[in-house]
Image (cartoon, rainbow, N blue to C red; front, side, top):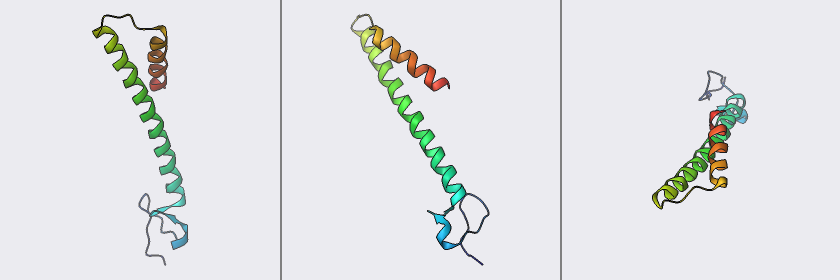
Length: 81
């Protein structure tokens, strides 16, 4: 009987069926969650950059460009999904 236990569930895989302490099923789920979080993080960074650019436009009393408005709309819609 294996003394190793998966960190994500109660399964006790063999030594060769683990990936960083997780059984293969939990490892795949963890990778999916990580990729989803990375995508969300990228969208948040893009949104922040667009909002900072908008703030700069207002500070220097300049009208924001159409490109900036499109970027703001795109990031807002992407984050709502």
